[in-house]
Amino acid sequence: MHPWRQNRSAANRPNATVSMTKETIFAVNLLGEGLFLQKKIEKRHAEKKKRA
Image (cartoon, rainbow, N blue to C red; front, top):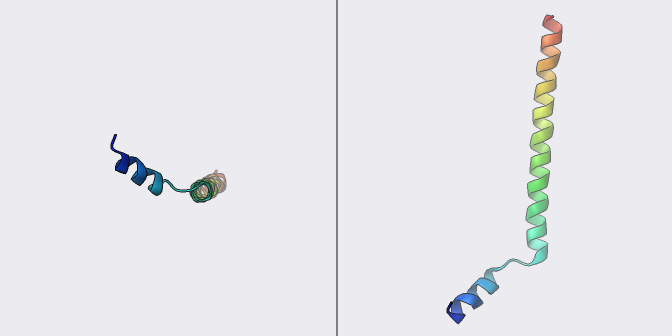
């Protein structure tokens, strides 16, 4: 491996706070999607109960 490549990858490596923020945003998005889907499913169940 060439030394300049090593230096470049080290410079491009994000610091811990940035990666933590990205992970947090990802987790929040997943949570939001989960809650959204749950509400959708609950609505469907409510509609089925009304029909029954």
